[in-house]
Structures are given as C-alpha cells and as structure tokens.
Image 1 (cartoon, one colour):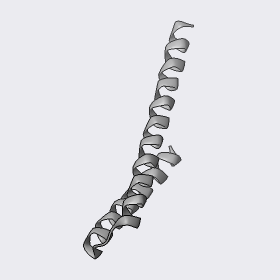
Image 2 (cartoon, one colour):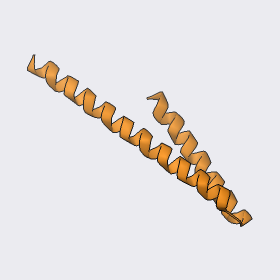
Image 3 (spheres, helix red, strand yellow):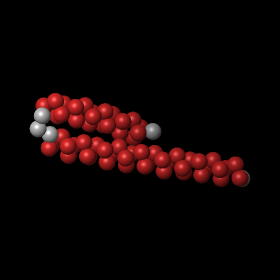
Image 4 (cartoon, one colour):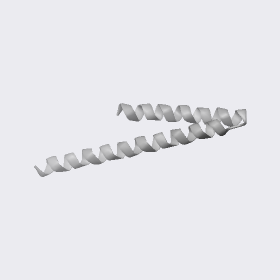
Length: 65
C-alpha cells in the first residue's frame, strides 16, 4: 500500500511539473508574440519568428506527453 501511495505521489508531482512547464511555454510564447508586433527591424522580426516557431514546437511536444 505504501508503495502505491509513493507511486501516486510521484505521478502527481510529474503532472504538476508538466503543467508548470506548459504554463511557462505559453507565457513565453505570448510574450514573444507581443514583441513581434512591436518589432521594427526585419532582422529582429525574423529572429522573433524563429523563436515563436521553436516555442510552438515545444508546446506541441509538451501537449503530446
């Protein structure tokens, strides 16, 4: 019984960590989109676009877990 409780707590911690990670990615993605709207330079726009693409991929990977 004690082993089951430890396993369940470990799973709960993993779910909490995953949720925190998803929230962090969503926050960074939203911040990057705000920066993109304010960007004036084509070089900066391109860099932020790449960052957004990477964050969207990371977000999709996290959602698959």
